[in-house]
Amino acid sequence: MPIRISWRNKYLINRSQQYTRKINACLAPIGMVCGPENDILHLIWIHINSVSQTENRTHMSSRETNIRALLAKVDAQATKIEAEYNRSLHAKSVDPELRIDIKNAFENLRSVLDYVAADIRERHCPAASASARFYFPVLPDEPTFDAQVDQWFPGLRRAAPAVVAALKAVQPFHSGYEWLGQFNRVNNENKHGDLVEQTRVESQRTTVTGQGGGQVSWGPGVTFGGGVSIMGVPVDPTTQLPAPHPSIKVERVTWVDFQFSGVGVSALGLLKQARSGIGQIEATLRPLL
Image 1 (spheres, rainbow, N blue to C red):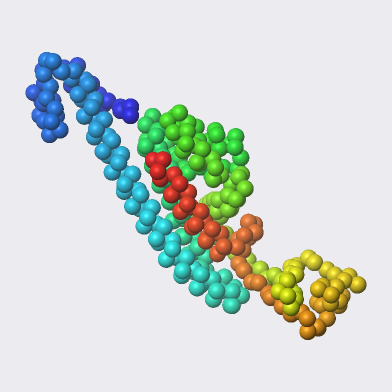
Image 2: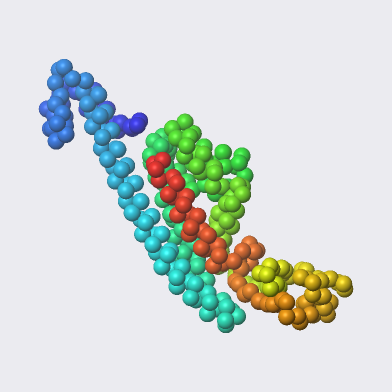
């Protein structure tokens, strides 16, 4: 792994004969000795490289420990949030404390992704500027992803193409990962402005079950005209339900949920999906670090 040599080490190298004794004192703890037959530059390079790699492993181990703690914290938060969520549904209004708890849980999950991003840079991008800002990539399309990864993770394509492939595979422009884009949007809006409003949404679903166990169900937006039958039983256009008949069972259930305004997804549902998905993303990338 390339290592930056400080001006002080360069000075020692240039004055190697004069400072051989001092260098020996520094290298003795790791079992190295400088002498006329040794390449002092090489020895110092090995020493600095060894120290750097040790520090990197320490930082990565610390972040992995933090990731485990954050995921455990989100699990505990989710249990509390679900109880608050159900109370708010019955009360037909969102408790302000619930909105704050959801915001905090989302922030903890975002921190998991950014810890993973830091591990990627530290392990595979030694030329990256320590002062440059970077984030775990969550981008809307492939060209934007490619450009941003090259900026945030310089040299990653060459050093670890498997990591780039793994990052690209979970982007929200792929089917099945739309939730990551929704998660990122809610997280950013919570961070940069007021808490994302949550709206109570009710929807009805009707299910007709026949004696043989077959089912037909429909939700909002379905309207039956005259002459329609379900499982051989005529539908009353006035009630939009099959007429009472011993051969069928009719159930109408009202589903109630809180959705993020402007995003159109269940607040609790997105939290659960994000917890599961982000845990899986971290588990997939960890062996590549």
